[in-house]
Length: 80
Image (tube, rainbow, N blue to C red; front, side, top):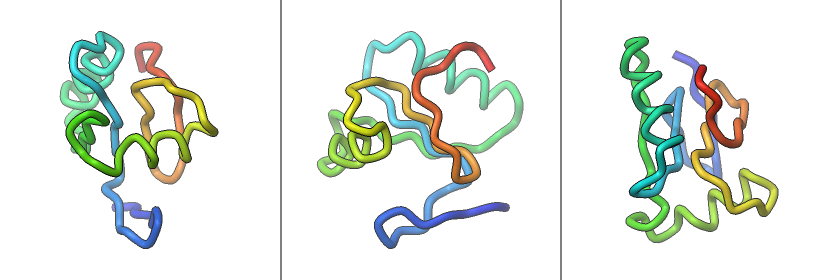
């Protein structure tokens, strides 16, 4: 499993920053679940440091989902 560090923390192979009610977040989670890929979900409204992390990863853009997979940052989700 490929892992990388973010702010000194070991992250899962796939991390998805989400918020409640986001259909693109739900589609991203379904995609990974359907493909048998484990992911860590971070809800930006429930995890205190998540919004700052999301803004750092996205270059200041307020967009969800932000998907970090094998060290690559993806903004939004377009179906796969």
